Length: 188
Image 1 (cartoon, rainbow, N blue to C red):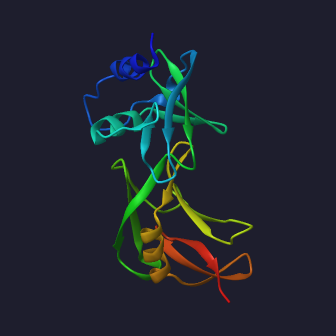
Image 2 (cartoon, rainbow, N blue to C red):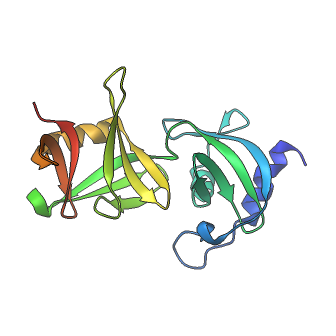
Image 3 (cartoon, rainbow, N blue to C red):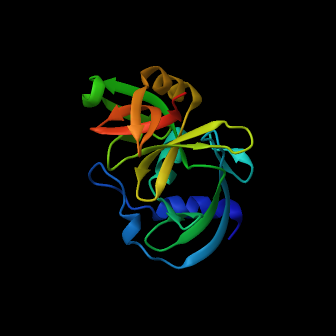
């Protein structure tokens, strides 16, 4: 089968969801069928055979069957598992909704594929600092072993919400959500 036919075949294998929710990809253990020429760029754009996938509904459908095993990413159906490339994180948090304030504040993130997650104990927010550039890369846990890179504009919103806090005896600036304080930068 041609590589172009593999993506169409994979789409046909994704079970139709009767109710809203995600397929149970964590329960599926099909054989590995090789790598697919599909890539998710750092900015959240999906590419197939070097060409951007322009149909948001198709990207959303593929995003429901992505799974991370170790450092590798796969699209998984009940009968097939194919490898894909992910430059950073498979999703990008593109919108932030703030409810409440102070320690009672709740932060809801919406991703580029319309997943919604509220930061808290089950969906932690973390910031990785690049050692050479000191540039922050913030992430929010979305589901299973998958994260969303927080878009720069959304991160700026978090910075505006930042308050002082102490984590393990060190002073930080961070945000509250779901009763949890998430450090986003050292307090000076």
